Image 1 (cartoon, each protein chain N blue to C red):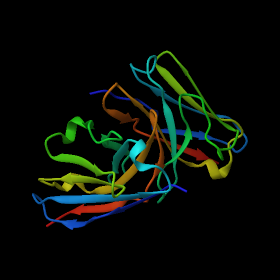
Image 2: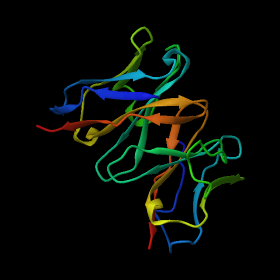
Image 3: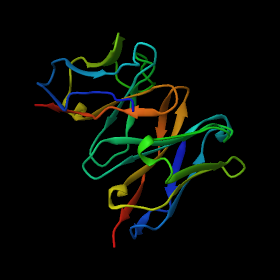
Image 4: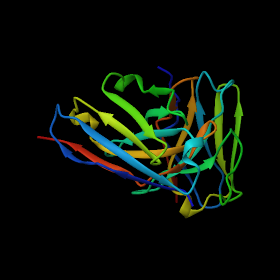
Length: 106
Length: 117
């Protein structure tokens, strides 16, 4: 079955840029989206269609995709951005989430 | 605003069945596909199933095929997940979620399912 691969953890200091990657064989042909999940909460869409930001999501969140890798970038990460982040895509029929990346801001 | 409210969770014995429901409001339900996603304690998100806006097409996670079925009632703005032969590893928070073209844009707060004797 189709898989998306993310690093388990990323750490940055406040104000630095955090980059979280997601690799998958279908990403050259399929969009990726990204979800933020804070402890005890439902996920929140932060990027859709590789690079689009939903209304209400801060501009420091951006996304890109090249070849088999999609990247979520948080420019000037803040303490409130500390959370788990998941990429999401499809292989045409089913859907799949990446394993998740724990972002630590300290 | 979009609201998704899951119900039907609880404690169920191994081998038994369970039906989760999700009541939707705040959008034209019949125009959107709906998903179920689960999250086991301390684990990541696992996509479970999707049903098309008209209920004609469904897709399931390979790991769950044969044990789950998703349905919807557009007259009642509800979507259901039927699970059978439940196992301990099915213990999770089950989220109902609304599709937005090729992704998910709204989530419910989740229903807790615990499979235990």
